[in-house]
Amino acid sequence: MTDLIGYVSSNPGIQEFFANLMSGEITLITGIFWLFFAAIVSMIAGAIGGIILAGKDLGYELAAILGSLFGPAGVIPVAAIGLVVLKLV
Image (cartoon, rainbow, N blue to C red; front, top):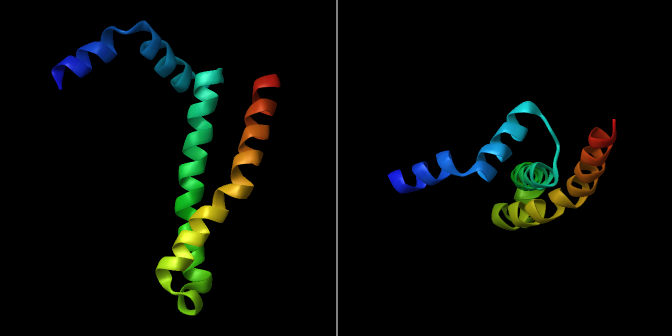
């Protein structure tokens, strides 16, 4: 574990990534990170929404699976467009 911490603290690429992430700079790597983060959050929100909307009709597990599949369908393109707009502005 200490080897991993030592590697992260001495690697300039990882330090630059965290510096860009904390300062709000949108680079290719931070954009991919935010897109991945938005996809994960939308999967969780879609699963919760599917359970709330159709849990009794379809069964809670199937509703959560379908919600987590359809949640990112609207979020990922909008998040990508938003990141491009933020980069250009």
